[in-house]
Length: 96
Image 1 (cartoon, helix red, strand yellow):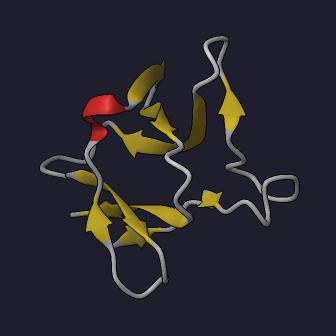
Image 2 (image 1 turned 180 degrees about the vertical axis):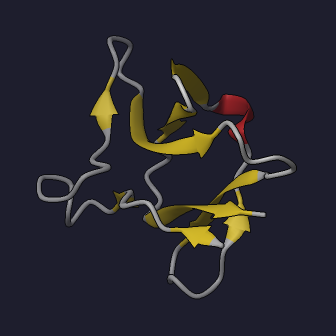
């Protein structure tokens, strides 16, 4: 199953779409998006992927990202803040 999140990183769409990069106090720009994880789902893996053409997808390295998790009873709300590197792209969450 693939859950496509609306997180588009493109200078042409910054002011119109969700996922618009924002700047922190140090000048670093980030793009963020959220998804929910079902706590009762066992053996499920959530993989954040990026594409530049919506055809070819690959996992992204989250070592430089900030991941916030919020307990919401039966599910966990996950928000990921990814440094905006100036490269256009799309993000999604693939569930295995």
